[in-house]
Length: 376
Image 1 (spheres, rainbow, N blue to C red):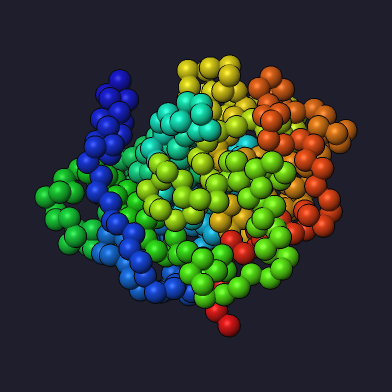
Image 2 (cartoon, rainbow, N blue to C red):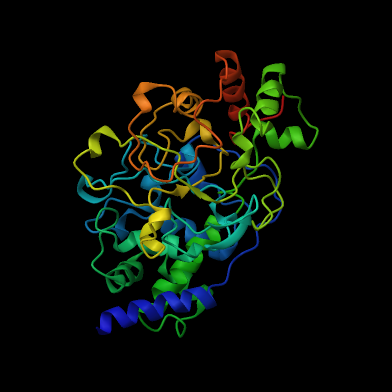
């Protein structure tokens, strides 16, 4: 009982007390390898720099060997660079989901109800199912998840942090008195991870699309056609959920290509999970509401071309497969058996009648959303 109370108090403290660093406009940030990214600390605050060191520390798992960066590599927009359907943690253990990319995640609102296309919907939160209401919980939970970093409790995480060579930096920044016990040590460590996740290094806005918006580069004719199709709410309908205007309740006025809503799009069950129960998605955290079963968050499409595989279960390996599903779900027999059939979105996808060329054009536009574009 004491352990449960301690954990709840810790989470509540995080909700109200965690300070964050504001993301400010920076010079374009480029790198060509994980090592180069790790060694380039340009523009990071002291707290974000410590958070970066914690993020890459493989000694914080049990046993050692898994860091946050293992499943969230900067070379794949902070998604899993192993590109497997199910991300693996300690001892090669896998869950039933593909690790979400965390680039641009910081701009999501805390999980709450918002008016989305005229209907009150759950939006925001973190992870595919919104289980983390707040950003700092997203950084906190993996440390004790048995399939991720597998620590027996946050006390064990604190002990490992105290042995890290960057711990003196944590003491210098917050003071030894502030790091009085395991709870506060982990609290301040998590606040540093959050500062790093909010930094320009994780959210660089350096795609061709961003430079196009600034008038510094032109899109090709194919990319323009793809952008027009993507934005057409009566034909391809992509932008109904992956907005091409700023998301009004996000914490930035830049375009994020998501409305942070949850939806059941009728995905088939992954072949490797046929023996598993239905993945209830949002329903698990919405008092098991049957209307929420099988609903998962609409992710940002920034960097989508380098974050395969796709969907919460990693069921699709290419953008071509994703577009085929959206285009033909209701008319192609191979999509005839959704995992959850009761509350599928039938209005926005399923039989879009897109041509092969139109699909190629949309994918060409999606490639313009990849960070790291260098101006000619």
